[in-house]
Length: 424
Image: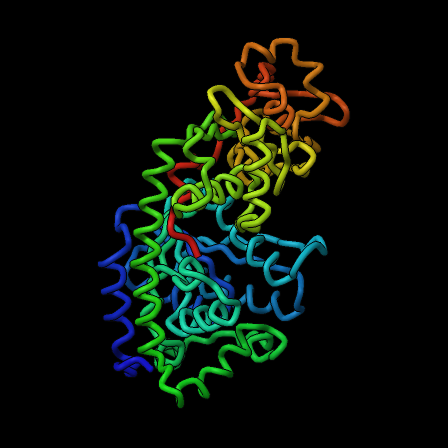
């Protein structure tokens, strides 16, 4: 456990974390669920920053009836502090693992909200306990260095600074501080449900301590893994700067980046490339990655993870988004108080004359209505997966294919700046 267990030291340790990692001259976004950790984050932040420099988002997953009351608690406390509060709805599409989908849905909601409100830094309420639990879960899965880094206090993700100022504080200390300040919080019953890996990891920790796997030693392991991981990421970034070029939403990988037989850097770069182009947070399986690159080096056009890899000039390959792997986004009942833009396929932000019932999707067959698409200089296959705006069956705009219609499209974060950021 932490050496200092006194609740009255929480504020000084939080302030020290801010001094070490936060930027003081900009508005900060915070993800607050209504649980003790995130409410402590909001309440502590309000003691050290002006209310007009803070704003809060809560995600309603629609999975538990209690969530409405939890979010109402956040709203009441945020209002009392003078902090702007936004609620975003998220619905599971029934695909894949629910916990993983909810995690990705939360991040996407936070990222989109931050970008729409011109925020450059977001804070999360992960604690020292979360760090230990994350390490134990990843040990159980046989994770390598990347997984065993657990969580960093300060990272970059999708062009945002992600800060975890509570990562050096224990959950028990935060609860004690909340009680001392007469601040209420909600308890999520799923935090005690043994069906979830994190709960089982928490329950297992007491037994591991008897074997010498104390909190202090586990956190030392995280520190060692983070140092190793940072070195590998820096090497990969340097390699990518030399051998990977971004062309709008595509990546051009030089021949040197295709040799995955021995060194870590090209493997790391290739995996990051597929994740970035495919708009996925996880990497393809190594065996699939290797086979795909082997076939591309032989001159074949191959697909993997929502991406198309095809030979390019001089022995290079071009990695493109696969149009069929994208999903349309429909913007209904536009709120005129929000900026005139919409996110599509996790990487693109489109700005233009919003109106109700527009659909944003891959251009696809609509390229036939773009007679000047060749002037873009982009391959036809790339443009098929580029963002376009539709009203029913009528193409309104395809910015990359030469049909502006008053719209523009930009990548939210470029490959080199975002793909090698230190992410959890």
